[in-house]
Image 1 (cartoon, helix red, strand yellow):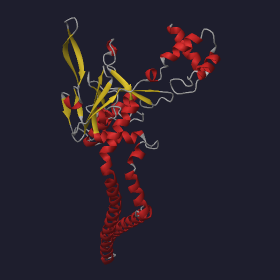
Image 2 (cartoon, helix red, strand yellow):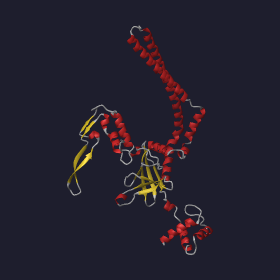
Image 3 (cartoon, helix red, strand yellow):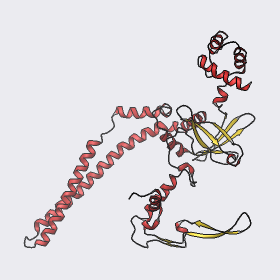
Image 4 (tube, one colour):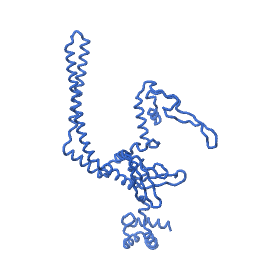
Length: 377
């Protein structure tokens, strides 16, 4: 029978599989209710805070260190929970570069990301504020411009080191090849000596002592097998790994010089960008000036720097692509006598050749605009 989600979670989180005995994890406390009455509340404590916690109680399936590592991985992969450091949660494939980094400068809440557009990939960052309690949102803005600005800061930070890092990576690549090959050669020399020693011991034993001869023969065969494995490993390494040519070195250097093009390329995975972003930035505080509609972003970098970036709040599509008032006024006056086709033809003659999005004027957008204008009359 397949395990359910709860049973799988129990197996992963229960320390009994790490040789630990736990008792009294759930503790009951008294709390004051809304009607000033005392009520019992059951609180689930952590395993190491239970009343009884005995390590090495029985033989474990996994070590306690591996169990602790698994718990850290589970906590790092949490999204609905509230980990100690939300910036280290597992990377998702969404197109919002700053997901999990933005914090509202008004209420201190983490900004959420929502995706819009025809393909559902246009990121928009929103702070819910007290909306759930019947209030309003703190702030919200499109993510494309902000992501681009932060990407520029990241590229400026790593650009001076990109070429040097590329060269060091190439040198480390070659050094690792040499070190691995040298280590295998030294290990083979040691095993060859042990093979010769085992053969000498086997060759000198009296055949009458069969038990001793069999033991020495087994030891000799084991050393021969170990030597054979090392030879195969060295051969496989030499076949799979080739030294960098001058063309390969020049290609690596070119990658270092074109970091910006690679970053904004469609072939660069968003998950990779987010990993780089996490290595550099801890958190970004975002504030909005309601009067000037300016966004102020204070980035808290891992090295202790706190650069400030100000920009005008990106306009939403409803505002950016809103049909001008003079166009709507013309449509209202003409709609009394002309149909949609005539409206489009007349609009072309009076220099209204395109709509607010820059698309060529046809009868269909004019029809939709007229319906909206009628509803607002």
